[in-house]
Length: 220
Image (tube, rainbow, N blue to C red; front, side, top):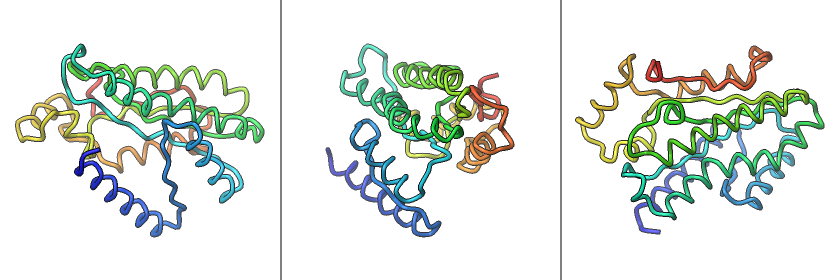
């Protein structure tokens, strides 16, 4: 791994620990594409809290924009390991616990790319389309056990992935992206948080299998 990604990872870990301390949470470093690491995360959560009511599958990566046939096999494998395999691993580790309690909410963070794909992000698009289908499949299977499963399809926002989606972070590329969003702005963490809180709350107790577009109208 080159120096820049290592520095970014270290910075992210420090920020996560700081935020966890501020809100009284317990930080946990996990490789969501590795079964043993995911199992350890779930075990730690159960040890701290006693039970798990809500899980949000928010980990995601992309490959850089390029024609589909030029994406390396390593990049393809990484995208599907993080964006798709992680959902399977967490479901495998957590579903029995939620079934035993007859309750639970699972929220998958997909993308408008899985609903209205952008050119040159083909395998990322496909991974998020997979997540939308997995959400519906999980929802119909788990509903009899009192477990609801929904997804968010956010439009691009001010996250570290934005520059990767665009290929380069320039005023011209930003303007090009914004021109596809009728509301005329990128999404914010608050936009996602408000939608997530609703879907995971008792106010949404009759909602499952929904892939909610939080996209300022992009998918219309």
